[in-house]
Image 1 (cartoon, rainbow, N blue to C red):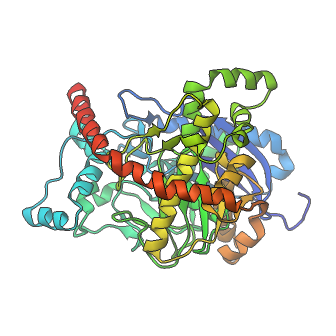
Image 2: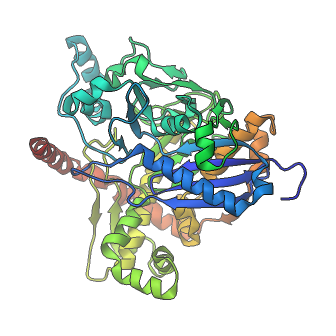
Length: 525
């Protein structure tokens, strides 16, 4: 910390469950960190809804920054050369002409759906039917928040001057500038990641999110100055007025960079609220049919990615709903409930004695009617079996995603790099290595999204000449996990013989349930 060549930035990471402010130097060290939990993470006025006040997140940034300033001390605080921010993706905020929020933000977990269908011409309907996209475009249209607002809150839509993501709004609160990073524009908006621009009026799928161009924000590449800290933001946060705020990207893109996965044979796995597997490629390739590759933090690169929406939220859900006894015992031992449950994982064999968990609690483009399921219960199963089956189920889903992407993108993944809360557990890291059959690595810090966004800031500051140099200086691997080949063979047989068949067997039931549920919900609104 006393190195005269040390440079320092402050990185904000606004996630689903907490906001973190970190002081990070150009050696990849987290000098100080303040974490503010989101309690509640969101509120739900109807089933499948997830909303939050946009200023709730700004208030968390303010609290975290003031706490960080006290911890850092005046000397270190004065060394801050720049600011950067990454947030959860696909969380729209509707602003009026004064850039004030008109309603709560739609948190990315929100799965409400409009009842209206896209107004397509006969040739368009025929085209999508031939391409096998008819149901996909209908689902995407109905799950896009702007279409729900048009249908159910037309007066709000009429007053909407800007339709932005949470990251854009927080950048505005800090700098007074309504713009974002290209890599931050990931979600249900008409952004063409291959071209790096908003979709034109003739784009084939623009009708899915037909937001007027003047309602959309400007954007810049990562490493570019978005604006500077305003006097108002400086007074509230304690940051120096005029500090530059550098563009980075959405949280998953920053995690990929922060794990050092800048080559196509290295896969970044995020064990966060959502679980993802992704990598970086210079050529645009779609990871799944009808699913775009997203813009990487590194300009000109892309991140093919497949997401399991609920991911490690499922462990929090399990603990909240079914692990009261373990929570009480953990409190007595002064450890976390996760730590207590993780200690029991090695007592349960691979495959959980025939208990299989399918983690598709939230639908997506390729599984529009998906639900979660648990198959194979017997009287021998315990809480620990269910807990481990959730971990295995998430990994099986990610293995399926890896196989799909390798074929579509024409690459071979040779190693895994883990981030997110689940990677704190050595047991989970080893299970992951065994299941994938690949060498698996864990970073020296869990704050990999913060590291990735800080790399973008240091490139912008000229501390690093490019992102390769930034990764070489700031990404540090702490642990290696080598797969047990006997365990891997067990998992491989389970995946091929059972897990890969579960969704196909249950899909018709999920579809029937989804349609009945949607009809009941529309009648209740």
